Image 1 (cartoon, rainbow, N blue to C red):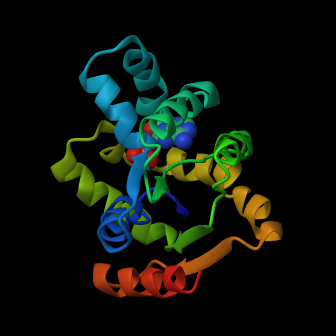
Image 2 (cartoon, rainbow, N blue to C red):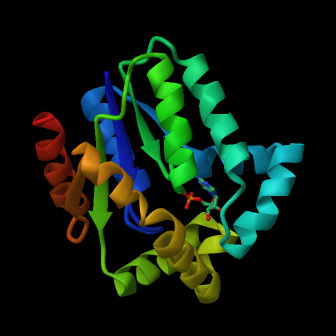
Length: 190
Ligand code: AMP
């Protein structure tokens, strides 16, 4: 089984590159951001509660996202592997993911970290906001808060995966195709 964590700050291109990795390696895409936005669209209790955090650029509580991932893993027992996009975002989420995956003896294969300069992240997110309609992509101070939350709570995950020999840095600057090529080269060697 191939279980990949696609890692990087907001605007690093995780969603775009996840699409490429799914097609190339036949994986199931699990994006907690997409799952949360579906809950908001369906106006579920979970979605209404999560929206309050998301609109401010804050993280949704760990228990909510871990619960969503758990049910998706259970629903796809036949999968060849998963690509985790936007999850885990805290060390507690990473530990919970390891427990869930160990139940099926299918550990994380690699954490692929897309590296993009901060100015480029802000430009990409503001441009995306014009077409996506995502409230959290349209306001520069919310974007800056998301990047600050990433730096404070999510970036330390590198220290969680590095001692396990699973952390790979990927240059996330350049064309979509160039970045996809870099990812493919790393994954093929796993
Ligand atoms: P994304 O689409 O990954 O940029 O996520 C959009 C927003 O959803 C984030 O700013 C958080 O508020 C929330 N979110 C997505 N994934 C997680 C996660 N793993 N843990 C906590 N909050 C999350």
